[in-house]
Image (cartoon, rainbow, N blue to C red; front, side):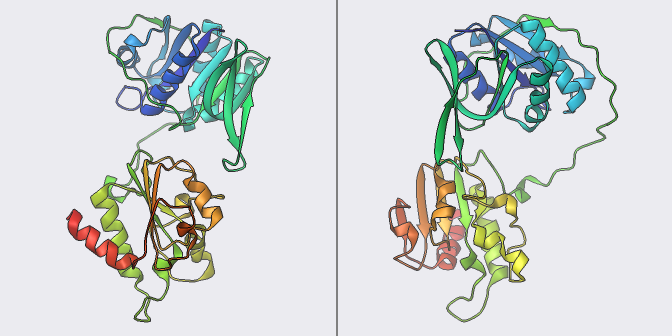
Length: 335
């Protein structure tokens, strides 16, 4: 097996996040000689975090210019690490930081890059990457003869590495820091309770257009729907998804859930999450929407129609009930 370089960057706390640990586990499974390249403000804590992984070398590009994500500095650091390691295969987690910088690095090195890989294997002594096409309906196994081959691994597809920490021996790599035109002055983020997209949540809660339609009393209860859904998300620490029919309502002049955007869309034209459990409410289980649930392990749905798509083999359990009543009761139990 060829030599491998794993590129990871530190988070704001100086340690490695779950996507980096998942990429580390995938790299170790290949069996080649592994070099870890770390980029960030201070790399020693992150190197100590994975000191027991068995890597042959820990190469480091550290300093204030590399604390914040920036194409110029990230590309320069990654290029220097690749040249120092001389590895044929370069792996990295598909974070926004690396997805932006590494394709340019592959061009500088005269190599090739592939993104959105879901797994890695060795076939006939050479590395091969697996990825999905056409919204997870087609699977392909890719191999390349060009080197270095840069592969970005999607998060949530591999188990994260777990092993002992220790004291790693790091090697500093000298980089001529390029001139920069951007300065990070701070970070603005919503409060944790207001965040609706939580990739690491145990439960995915998906709302359909039925929440904004007339209820048995002939009225639309949009305000109550918002209160019930947000109350459940906060109490269960769940992630929020939406059907295409619901997120499209804003463009049709119909009542909408104010916190629902196209970023929450699940399905053929939306996201494909990987939560352990999923609960669909007021959705009919149409095929384009259900495609997004392909990797959800346990699927349940609430719908008043016993003949909806969820009842035809698309859900493990279908509750034939009114979603408003069920969620009122659930919120009382969670409170």
